[in-house]
Every structure is written in structure tokens, then in C-alpha cells.
Length: 525
Image (cartoon, rainbow, N blue to C red; front, side, top):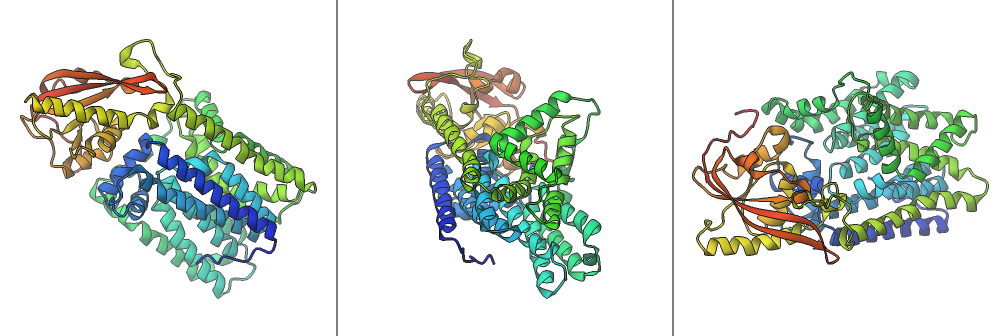
């Protein structure tokens, strides 16, 4: 579908290929060394328990995980991340092609550098096993087609065919994450304001139908589950109508960090230059990029005035702005100065990655709380992707000891209280020892695990279970589970070490004689 168009400048061809190769090699190395984060390991449940849709998101991330892990035949965390890494390599090529379309090869190369230098582009969507990975891939692919059909003076059969491709790709973006709907919002705004001839074309409406058909499984699943996914997300963005400047500052600061401060500044410089009348892109193209970016950015940034938001919600809007900035910097007469500035984010991010990798896997530093044992490591962001394999190895020894003594039944399952750290314990502790893990709690703590509980047959009255609490996320098991079990007894405490130093503790408990009184909060129960 995407033609590997010839690159006229061999120097640019060499740079883009090296950029893709080096970026992919770094991601593959990180994937082989770093444990999964709490979001990543949670989306593993989408792979293990596929469905038409899920509590949090549509199914695409699970589909990608199934494809690249061969439906979990390849069980390691590396193969879960392989899909995002492959998609991100292709995404670099796509953003290069889009830059070439809107202006020239140099613009495409600069866009590729800025995209690769973005924290969101390189790590969040380019490496992590989360819905943003397929979202960004399909978002860029959609822009690739948008440039062709939306900027065309005349609507020929070629443009009609391309808008149908867009309808398919936009549907796949929505099947990745609900923000994909903003592709259609941007296109519709542009058509209404600047290209109304499309409103007389049946292909415009057929493209919309194609997107709707692709999204139909998500709608059907929500109908069957009392629209629980839509309700959950609407509650996350419903304004509290209490002005919160701290939330707004956090959102803007997050956008700055997620996009790489240098990339952010380069975009701002390009926008200011355009406002001042500097022409480096034709007006139609600049207008189109702005319309694609503005709705998503304005809506979610506005939400942050009244309630807490997450910066990656607005991140796809910056893909258009990266292309806009690339067009500006490719226009710079001093070519050495321009290439320095667009490469600088990549160099800066490389330093950050080295530091972060050392902090996560090798550093003896404790950057969280260290005042008492039950909160040791709290607020240490590195704990999210470190130490879970150590906990799994410790559990094998402790459970073997308890079961050999007759204190616990053979192959007893585990209990946790929330999707994090529940999903980590499921992947790194329960799965390797071929045990089940169940969650006990309200729906907003269980998420997908409300369905997983049922898939695994549910808790059995009178049975004994294991529970593992970690000090950085510690909750008293007596408060969590005291009403569900006759006794809760401690078994052992294990130190999780890094660089020869303790970074947190894992507390092992046995939960005796389940009373059978937990009601799994599925919407259709």
C-alpha cells in the first residue's frame, strides 16, 4: 500500500535508513533488558483473554500482541514489545514520506528526526506495549492519505479511492484508542470550512461507513456490557467545574516532557514564525496540519482546567505539529544549524535513556521513601519496571516450602487487590508457576480483571490463597481481605535488591478459608 518511493538525495536516504536501524536496535536492546511497566503488563491480559473490546480500550493492542507473540507461543515480555518496535520503525518511514509529500525530502528527514527525538514517539508509543503504539502508526498512515485527498484541487477517482483508504485506517486508529476519532473530526472541520465539494461526494460518506464498520465490534461489546467502557472514559473527563490551575500546569508540563522539551520549543518557534508572516509551507497544507492538531489538543487541554488529565491524551496532536516544525527548519538557510537543532532532541533523549536505564536496572540509589519497611520505595518510579522477576523467584521457593509442609494446598492461586500490581504479579509470579491470580475489589480497581476472574472460574469457597504485597504500593491485607477470609497469616518478607542495595520489600501472606462472599462486579451480574 505504501510505495517505497525513490529518494533522490543519497545522503538523505542513508540518514533515514540509519535512523530507523539505530532507533530499532536501541528499542530491541531495552525490550530485552527491562521488565514490563504496569500498563504494559496489564495489556498482556488483552492478549491472553482476547475479546471484541475491553474495559479500558478497544482491542487493537491485544491483536498486535497476539500477532507478534504468535498468540503467546512466545511468552516473554520481549515479544510483547516487538510489535510496537516494528510499528515504530515503519512509522518513522511514514512520517518521512508525509514530510516529503507536503514539501520535500529534507522536510521528511527533519520530521523523522523530531519524531524519533520525542519521548512519546520513541518510548511511549514506539517501545511500550500500550494502545498508543498502534494508534500512532494508524494516525500517521491516515495523515499520509489525508494529504492526498484533502489538499487536491479536483476530486478525481484517485482522491475518491484514497479517502476510502483513510476511512479504513481511521477506523483502525479508533480500534486502537478512542482518540482516533479526532482524525475524522479534523477532516470534517477542514471539509466544512475549506473543501465543501467533498460533501457532495458519496465516497466521503462511504469512508465514514467503513470507519463505523471497523469500530462495530467495540460498539457491540459495549452494548453487551452496559456501555461500561464509554461510561468509564466519560467519567474520567467530565468536568468538576472547579478551576484547578495546578491540573492545567501539570498537563502543560507533561506535554512539554512527553514531546521532549527541545522538540516542543522547536514547534513553538515554527508557530511564532508563521504568525509573524514567514512562509515556509503553502497555506493549505499549514491549515490542514493545524486543523488536524487543534481539536484534540484544545479539548483535552481544556479538560485539565477542571480535572486531572494525562499528557499522552493530547500527544497524537503533536504529530501534525512535528511536520509543521520540520517544514520550518528545513527552510533554514544555514543547513548545518538546522540539522544540529533537529538532531539535538535525539541526542538529548539518548542521554536520558542511558540515565534512565542505569537508574532502573543498575542503580543502588533509592529515589523513593526509605523511612519504614511497609512504605519502602514508595514514589520510586523505577519500581514499576524492576524487581518483579525477583519476586517471582522468591515465590517459587516460599510456595514450595509451604506446600511441602502441608501449610498450603498444592498449586494454590494468588489474590491481589488492584490491576496494579495485580497484573505484574500475574505475569511474573502466577504465570511462571502455572497458577491463577484473582482480584478482589471494586470495578475501578479490577478493570479487565473482572472478566478475567470469570474466565478463570472464580474464587472457590473454603479454598486457601496466596497474597503478595509490595512496599512501594503497600495496602494492609487485613483491611483489604479480612472480611473474605477466616485468617490472614504472614509467611515471609523478601528484600528486592539492585546494585547490592535494598530498593523495596515484598511481603508474602497466606489467606485461609475463603468465605465465598465476594461479588464479582461485572456489569451484567
